[in-house]
Image (cartoon, rainbow, N blue to C red; front, side, top):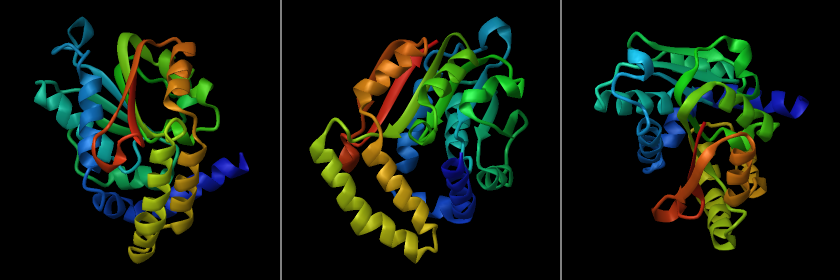
Length: 241
């Protein structure tokens, strides 16, 4: 618990400059967009039961992924209710400060305890860079599964290099040569980015993660990596409740 509280505090401190840091990654928004599109492929134009769909953005951070989820829904002619959930009050403050249409809201919460938030059953869920940072992965996936309607899709975007030694070496090189120095230049929370570096090294492989999806009750589980320098490093994993 102490380590987890320290992680939340790190994200709180980094919140003010988080958008600036990720903007320096030219593929960041594009990858969020691709993940958001995958969530929407199983959502009917009018949602189930004739109502507009409910979408969850889990680990929403400063709202960048929420924005891409909203854009993806609008491209499909939807006016969804989107609920962003995050454990960092600092990140949520940054998200809420942005301009949002009616139907977008942000709440403080944890993936493994979504049932305590009283949320409506969701038509889809996005989880970008979340699963690697949770203290109890099986409980988190089970909590997400319970929050979804039957047939709804969870799409997780995250880093993993356990299955690819070449990708692991590339990840370490980029972190040491680019990411950590940039964090110093922009005044970011360097300790947090060091944690993020090590958390990727220590995270389970994608095959094992897919198995965790299945054990949590998800079906039709599949995964793919992205193109470019993050090939073998950044992955999309999806499953259907």
